[in-house]
Image (cartoon, rainbow, N blue to C red; front, top):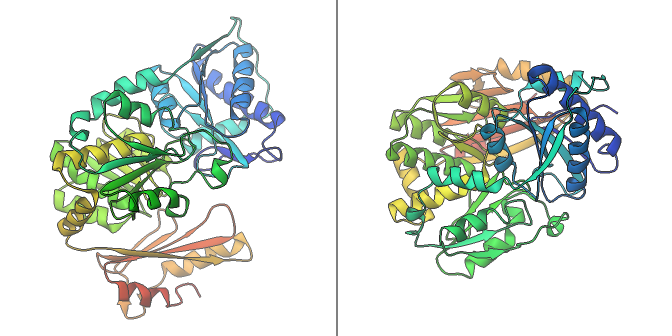
Length: 457
């Protein structure tokens, strides 16, 4: 079968394409890449999330790489992706994480994390794919396998980035929804260690994720929302399956978009004294653009996918980098999305200002001078061959309805700007013959008008 690396590793359905044979093939391809690039002295760390068979596959991969001659460090327990990634940076090691992130429970995946601790670039994953089924000789030295808990070093690092005394000032009750994910035993442990009161939901690992999805989006956070509505003055925090994404619910029981969180934290960290740029993807909100401009902060926009955000974070001094799907990281941390630190920093901002999350949302829109509305339409096509001609036509548009197109950007699909506060983004899904059309405007009526206009002929 054809093994492909997407924006965040290789993922497939367990028992169909995700088999022992294919895991062995990918493991050997990664091993050859590490050997050719760094030699056998480069350590390799192995981690896994709560998914079915993830621990077993991690053990198989560890044995293969040890037998090849590598020093292998296998996690002694379920571990969040950002915890493993930080240890890769700390130990100057590469890492392999067994996870399918927020995908349905029947999926499993392998994510390769280079020693810089961010998502592997396309150049790296292409080299790994090129190694599939190629043989390479064992090292002359014997490999060794260690079992290790990666948490302590991560905790030490987080303590330097987060002011837990400020979090103790938070007036809202904190409710942590473990969502059956890898953050259980980590996020709650950080709060306990720092003597921060909180309540919990769904605090056990379940490879079926309670019959839902390991995705901290509103439709999978209904229990958390209900608990908040029945618990006076409370907020909710959650993470996805491997804890690299975050989900936040405010005191009204409403989902707070990652775009709002990034904007709030950009303002907070700037006021805290952080210097540098903000990195966002082409799909992220114009709210971030406006907040950055008002703060005098440089804005760097990338294609969709945190591997592009992480790459920008490695080449620029960046206050915060984030994406609309719920991933962010900050200066002084790894160039990889980390849902744990995202949740901690929003608590820190609340504690610093002595305000509720609802108040911080209201303040960021007041600071920006406007509020934004978003929507999306998915256009199914008959084949992938239709995508390029359609995008070529969209690029040529000069007007939509009565609105002039003021700028066109093609770094990822086609982004059409209609003034400073309205945009339309047309981009392919990447996995199927489908175009996603994103709308954003500070005017709800304008957004509805644009949605009803046939942009794609």
